[in-house]
Image (cartoon, rainbow, N blue to C red; front, side, top):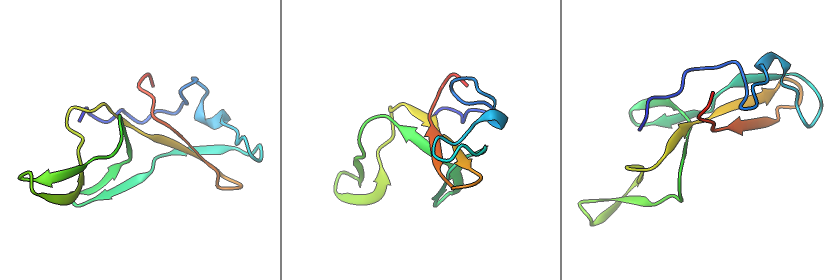
Length: 95
């Protein structure tokens, strides 16, 4: 998996986070990320190319993990409306 992208205060369209407006209620939005709890500890939610495939242990037993090896993986940045709670997420590599 590539190194997570650094935290940025802008959206994929280069709009500063301070000026991000909710498309539902026209209130300000705050930048953040979705937390993914894994056995190894908390991690940033990541977009993975393709569809989910379960991993098999020694080719026999399906374990509760998904195959990610060799797939494109991009950290997800999410904006939350301060008023209505609407979430808008982006997995963008050019931030």
